[in-house]
Amino acid sequence: MNWYGIRAIFRFEMARFFRSIVQSLVSPVLSTSLYFVVFGTAIGSRIESLEGVSYGAFIVPGLIMLSVLTQSLQNASFGIYFPKFIGTIYEILSAPISSLEIVIGYVGAAATKAMIIGTIILVTSFFFVDITIQHPFWMLAFLTLTCVSFSLLGFIIGIWAKSFEQLNLVPLLVVTPLVFLGGSFYSITMLPPIWQTISLFNPVLYLVSGFRWSFFGTADVPVLASLIAITGFTALGLAIVWWIFRTGYRLKA
Amino acid sequence: MSAIVDVENVTKIYEGGFEALRNTNLQIEEGEILALLGPNGAGKTTLISTICGLSSPTSGHIRVAGHDVVTDFREARKLIGLVPQEINLEPFEFVINTVRFSRGLFGKPRNDALLESILRDLSLWDKKDSRIAALSGGMKRRVLIAKALSHEPRVLFLDEPTAGVDVELRKDMWALVDRLRQDGVTIILTTHYIEEAEAIADRVGVINKGEILLVEDKTALISRMGRKEMRIELTESVSEIPESLASYDLTRVEDGSALIYSYDTRGERTGITSLLKSLQEAGIGLKDIQTHQSSLEDIFVTLVQEASA
Image (cartoon, rainbow over all chains, first blue to last red; front, side, top):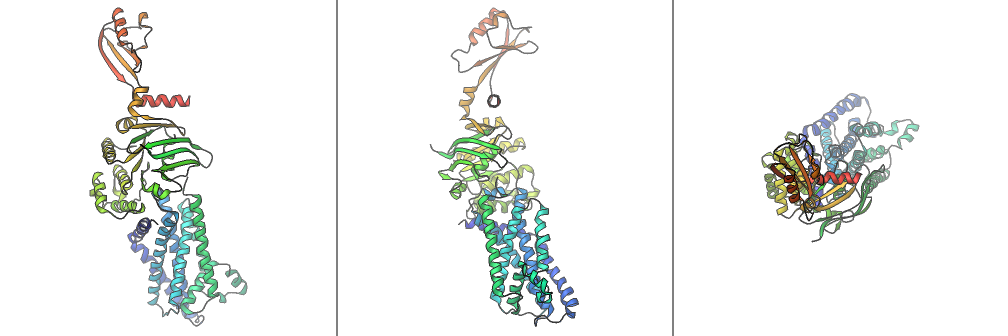
């Protein structure tokens, strides 16, 4: 294993994050606070508690998921797209580093950034609502797996994208709707039956549901289903990345 | 001496069918400086990219110090440093960080003393805390070289290192190449500038349309292919070459003030003595004589033209 190589990529990517620390941290904290003010306080005060949890607290896991998913995608896709765009990718392709190590470096850094942001949002939410986390271990496990799988997805998008427009296309057109319709801000039991069934095809539902279970012990879908979904997601991402490096898809001439 | 880089029957066909390399063979000796000459699109960069892992050969094998660049890429690539043709650098990064990154990427532990000496050699040390974006074009090129040297490669590829750089930097670059050679680094450079190959290379390879036309010792090449010219300045202009001199390969310069005699240095007889005698017999007075060895550039042009003919 080329540990120095992995560390070099990881540190280089983290340096990018810390270079724009204000932008990296202030914006998620600000947007989360806004969600709390609008949904938690203004609208939430008119909504009865959901499954025994106040609405303000109920949306915390969904909010964290929303940020973590977008951040994972953005960081990872940008992280690998940018070297492609400016040409510095030549160095990585000519280095004695395997594709697995490259992925560990880039995806690891993107997932770490998303984890940091997720944690900050969680801490911020303590200022607005009372939350107790019932299953801290599973909370961490779901958070980590989500960060990793969506960073993998972001990495794939970054390699696939040929322009900045394409880079933003998938997060904007696919992921954001899925997150909003995945029960981030509501329980799918509030939906008419037909929409409940449709929601079951939304992968993000399983992530949000499992994550919320780790907080409050209640879930839209069985926890096991969530766990299988997130593991399957990660495995799929790994498989695609493996294929990309094996064929050199959009990386090598 | 065994070849440190061994390119064996390599063909590279790009998607879309363009054949950039055709059954290429090239052995690069350890410690030498090899200049690859060729017109644009000849396959110079493709050859380098294929050795360095940026593109995969369609067929054939490449070994660096005995390690196959595909199956044993780790060992092979550790030995290689690459300075690309384009200035590919992350603009917001600091010089020292980007050089440290390169060293780490190639699997080497941090060594600030070494990086300091590399940066000092390249007159970059006082720029180490500058952002790349703040550097001039020449400085950026130096950063690329520093990155390539950061992991102490045994083989260094310089893809057109002096394209579009000023005279001073070019001289610096040549001096650097010379120092590296003394340290035993093998250097392969591609260039358009024949005088560059003439100035620093040990051997010259000529590549055109994906094929290596020849690889030969520079001085041997020049003397083998070289024709010499003798310019004979006349005391009085001639309007035409006299009949008695028709058997010599002579041309008259435009105003007739001089004659140019070209001859082969390899020949047993260069014909100079008899020419001078004939000139005297024809009553032509000589003012001055200059000889000129044809340069690598002339040879190169001839070779490429012959190949395309």
